Image (cartoon, rainbow, N blue to C red; front, side, top):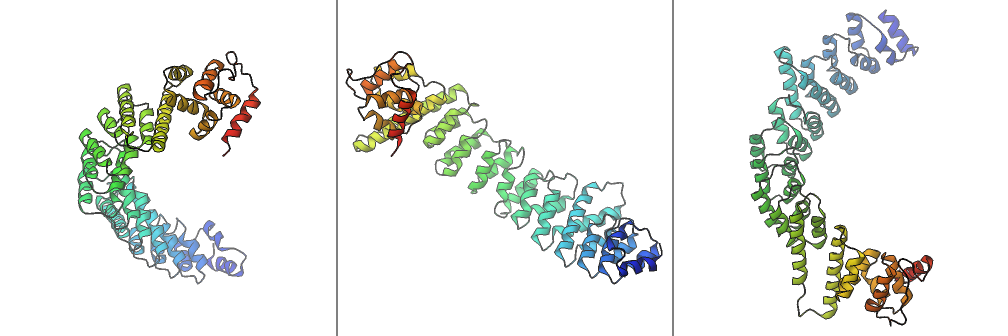
Length: 433
């Protein structure tokens, strides 16, 4: 292709600059295009992969930043030009270079020329010290899982003063050893560094011990959530003791995989009822552990009924406790009509009311209004909603609703004396505040 004719067509607009990428030309033609006054022509040239390295090196100093960006991203650019571009004043040029170098570095084998490999690594080291955190973050994200990049570069990124740079390396890099991690922890790293380390896959027990003994509660919580992290039983016991003072450690402890029996039982003595229910429902705990947790729960219920407490508060606490017990039994598949009927017969009426409320999926206040209404229809509807037979529902009317036996409604089996619509209406009436 004659350069003068190509240039003339470009200047006349008959050929747009994008067409340059499909043209083949000699070294002299490429050299003249590299000095063309139209930056679009130089940009298209800079993006080509078949241009000799000398031309690409020349273009790496082009005054147009877009030209330099394309040279930075070009895989054919010589390593010396890459090294120079690592000092470029334009952050976007350095960003494009960082993306390319991060792809190239792991692929450099020992068989390649030492000078090429050395220049690439020097460029990588320069980018790891870049003044712009976004460049260093980009590099860290690209290299975080690579097993074959310079340890010096990984070490620098791991100790970066910006957590957005250090975190990906600390959490994922396979190059960091336990000695490296211990050294970083002891150096008072940037806030968030311990949390990133705590999330590492298959974290060793030694590193876990150091994090568990630190003052970083967020990192300790992250460590507990990391089921792949190795935790010695004594370390876990220390965390349980610490959770008595630190509420934020309780939830991750309750949900920790492979929770030992002793730790689970000690947790049950001080965690809230909502977490206690989570603990009791865990399917990976042994039956002995679940049984122990429930015993602790019942012991706590007895201990929370002080004699000097006002009757209104005592009643409220008892209702709440009985509801929690009923919920736990339901989750365990042990809450049924026979249990409710036996509770009534044995005069455990507070539990019977709570069990019916849980089966009916109604709030304690709604159950209290229905049972206090002296309405046979309303109480019958409550038994229907709870899935009770009519025989048991009649007992509920008399014993819990205190309805005169002569006024109580009767039926046979699951045949209620009211229609489903009538009973649903009764529940709706008492459910409205």
